[in-house]
Image (cartoon, rainbow, N blue to C red):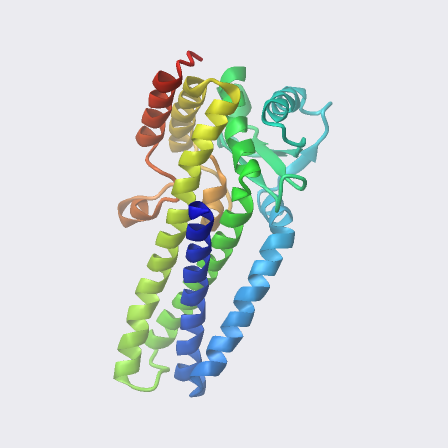
Length: 290
């Protein structure tokens, strides 16, 4: 219940940020603060509906992922079947992403509509035990409905950043109603996307830790997942993803996008060393040796 309430609170904060920007846009450009707020509230509702029903299709399309049959990907199918049996979960659809970046993600609005996707690059990199740990992590996300939560959060956060950038350029080129308003808009343009990213980060990091733990317990091999994460971290450093939207990075087991400086403050994933340390501690706690 605590986790559900916190998630609802984070969603409310993201939506309020979006409506707040609409409020400023309405007053700044139209002289009608409430009209802007209501329009952006409707946009937020529309984005939530689109994310709920179409998030899996949008994500798969954006990464050119192809749904495959058991005959086309027998290794992945067999591992996911074993995990579903252990976790009492329905079999998801399987997709392959044509990328040499080693990674995996899950998408869909519930466990009956889920898709688990792996990149071509992850298959030669991991052993079967390690790949099972990765796929168990993704099935834990499916079980907890994290994929829906993070898809909607990413959509709203991306929209906030876009609206703030629009503010920035309009204020920079002097289309406002005075210097005070322009200064306020510049502040909003800088702080709104940062706030949105921090809220999205809070949603994602907590859920990554939980999925690591539940996935490892599902297969009873925390160290297999820890080894996989170490390999994926190095693989993503060497070969970041070639294309895609950074707003979807929270869906992947390892952040596929790389940046330096202040960008690292807003990574959607917990530090890899912390994730591996927790899995090692879990292995010691449970006595699992795998």
